[in-house]
Amino acid sequence: MGTPAKRATLTPVPGSICDVLPAVAALFDVPDAVDRLGLAEQVGDVDRVLVVLVDGLGWHLLPRLAGDAPLLASVLAGAGRLGQLECTFPSTTPTSLVSLGTGAQPGEHGILGFTLNIPGTDRVLTHILWRDDPPYPEWQPLPTWFERLRAAGVDARAVLPAAFIGSGLTDAAYRGAQLLALHPNGDHAAQLTEVLRAGPGVVYGYTADLDNAAHAFGVGSPQWHQAAAGIDALLTRLVEALPRNAALLVTADHGGLNVAPDARVDLDLDPRLGAGVRVVAGEARVRYLHTQPGAAADVQAAWTEAAAGWAHVYSREQAVASGMFGPVNPAHLARIGDVVVVCTGDAAVLATAHEPAEMARLIGFHGGRTDVEMAIPLIVLPA
Image (cartoon, rainbow, N blue to C red; front, side):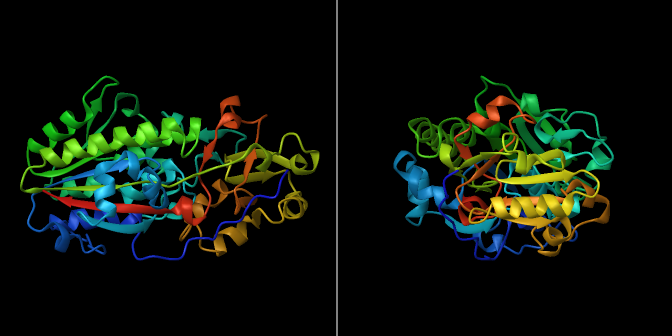
């Protein structure tokens, strides 16, 4: 394996994805909602807010896509308000969506990665495929801000791809919202606008086109730029249709980077790295290794030697003590691997015997703690 270039870890910035919905809720005087982002000063007197999460729209990717995105280019030039936030760790979609929805750190809500071992079993839960098992409120017990909004008498609606409706991840992140299905050939902008105009409250929308292109074709690919143009067209239509008493907020769940073929290691092809490992979870940029009884120290030592220069290797206790997950509910501890491998360079850890083959074919990745993965924008566009 080649030695990947290192990337600096994120310098702390004021505000995170956890602060977005509490700030929105504070506009509607929801109890216990705190506006840590100064949102009230930015949007003025509004009675409805549209929040759009663009999957994969990292802060450091904005300049790269601006040539295909006139609206976002104008934001970079000073239109509207542009602020930098950070997502939660791991920098992966299920974790970030639930941190957005609950306003809580991953250690508190328990969605600690793209995939997780179900404690007491050898099963691995892939959150984007999660249906009824484990039960939703047991796996993610915290209330969401959509529930809090509705309890305060504020309408909370979420326009989501039809395939998301009824899933465990949707319940974990958006529990309490009125869910409205966006069908594959539906007009996303028109539907969001119609829901926003229907009455006061909070409307949430989501699009994965940019992230899908990054994974399949790479950040900077023609397909990625084409997806960026489509996202910009969607946002432009939303801005043009905003009622005068509304504001549009655009944020993201993570950034991303490309990983070259020679910067990948397959733990299932290296006997040193597979020895003593019982269950593999997480994803390519952050691996949770659940070990055979008594093997944790040996597994950590083997990985520490093999990953020198391109990953940090922690015991579970070290990872929790670092604070990377925020405060960790003791009930969630066993979901974290006995050994945690976090890529620090442009590297990826494949697990071809444990995961679908398409995972090894991805070009763009995220999940780690580097600045390019963790930094996300908050764009505020009043009517």
